Length: 406
Ligand SMILES: *Cc1c(COP(=O)(O)O)cnc(C)c1O
Ligand SMILES: [Zn+2]
Image 1 (tube, rainbow, N blue to C red):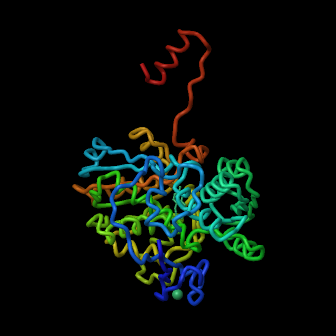
Image 2 (cartoon, rainbow, N blue to C red):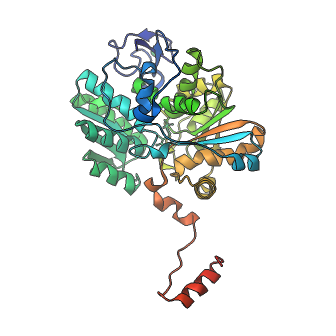
Image 3 (cartoon, helix red, strand yellow):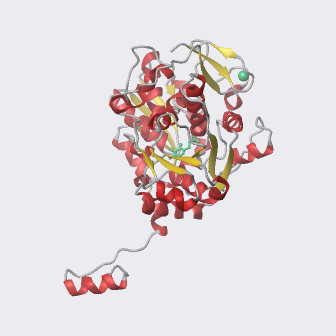
């Protein structure tokens, strides 16, 4: 599709070949770019099942013969949870499980676009800084596509995520610092060596890949757009992408409504929420981040301006939840729905629990962004112990009785 890139801060527009990442006038923090299409398609049939996110390629900033990662990205399930909705007083509740992507997080939608662009522009190496998932996603999709990846993660990233990177063959640099430190270092190194950058917000195409999550949900709901869409927020790109996906469909005339978007942050890393509430979106309320939800433990959110503007236009807002609420939400959601999410994924569910009284009678879709197996250590203290027993029937009966199972 033919498109232009527009700065969310100053509104200048650029041709795709004029700029690579951000607005040269406003700089990388505020001058993130949004993709604006010359025309949007109007067809309503999408072959999600076979093509995943590429079913929506007419809504994406790629050429006709674009490069597709040879893995099925997207086409994740949307579950209708009638009972749970009733319990919470909602008209309906849908859970979109993006932990079911090839590398087990929502980030695959963005990495697929980054790799397609890297190939189109002739790069052989891609890089990113990441709390974990963008990295494992990029390295997995790069491996499938035969290009190299260099990854910068904070040293404290969960082991499962780091191991996933090494398994896929990425060069992994563990930065002795925070995600925000890793982000800044990666940009210096990447620029020096001329690699293609897959850092959140900096690269305008990532959001376009991510918006397919919203478009899929809309398609799976036969274009009956729910009243509210909720998702967890770190840098603010995913939440922006949910809005953009619904907005593009509305602008194309395929749907007639954009849900209220509610972004959920961890209390120890709620810079986007605080910026939103201050009302001055171009003065980000940066902080030192700390949360067990590592994927959203971001103190210097890189897509804060876009996230605030988009959420405001949707009529939504940002809320935050405590680590304790997140821990409990992982377990409760797994037990009530069978969907086991990593902390940042379950943050959305924790947010719903917190404000369900405000949403009485509404239909709600929750985007679950990452799989629980990504980080099993954090949730361990929220579940019980196993029952050890000798291999004897009587002993097993006693233990079962103690456990209250019989
Ligand atoms: C990256 C990520 C998010 C948040 O996305 P942002 O664009 O940083 O706001 C939420 N959940 C998971 C599992 C993630 O990996
Ligand atoms: Zn600008």
